[in-house]
Image 1 (spheres, rainbow, N blue to C red):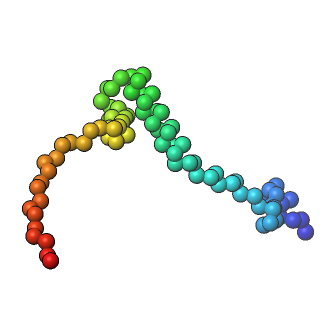
Image 2: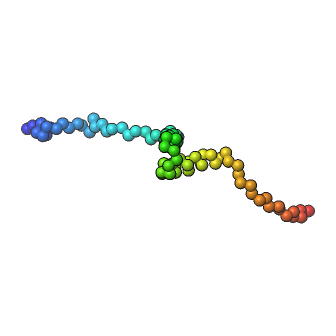
Image 3: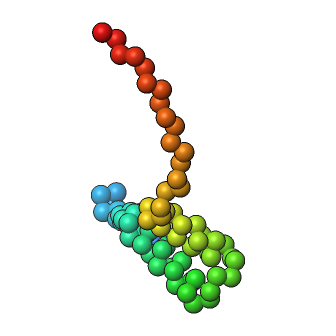
Length: 87
């Protein structure tokens, strides 16, 4: 009797020899963010601010990143009433 592989022209591999494609490691988050930022900067510089979704994302990200350097809005200072100290 002929093996199945000879009958239908296929070859089978034993279970232990089965090789599956490797799963790639996830990308580093900072590298992904940096690439996205570079893309948005490049888009805004090459085309100018045209109002598309890419430009809106660029302006939003830019404002978030530059927020730390802006001066805080002056706020009214409320005077606390002096309370008598307990003896």
